[in-house]
Length: 198
Image: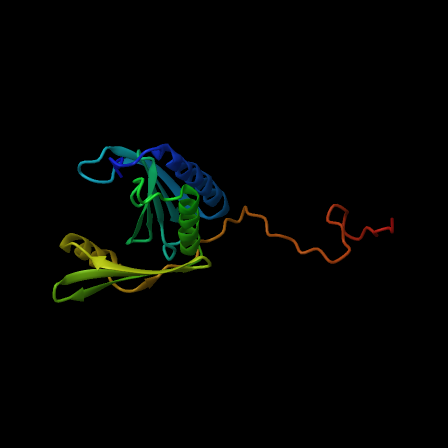
């Protein structure tokens, strides 16, 4: 994303980078994933940007890719086709609220992790289209759009042309399972230790 010519105080969007770094660290610790960091171009006329990909260790779960743009902002990709630029514009007229954008980012990511992303490619007379649904606790969205011949061909070869409901991410075995303590039991005491009345 390039800096918008009618945007002032664009540095307020730097909180998106902070929020993304925090979330990436949380997800890396909590889920069984592979984390890859590279420098990539988002487009032919764009400079290199930091790209972080989280790839679940089960192929049934959808990947997450986040590009940290120089604007500053984020380019987020969920699964195969869901793509989001945060902020969407960054100009003074749109006046996007960075705090709201962070919530959008977290809601979309949570929906992916919970298994709420559904995608498919459909073929028509005029070409191929992608169709996406993203459903979670704080989001219920649907998108569709045209695919280039190259993308449609790659989708068929990669097995993405058929409808796919991405599975929830697998939780890491290192994450402790919360213990439900009986009423009146102090978890700091050893099991079987009587609780004396104060």
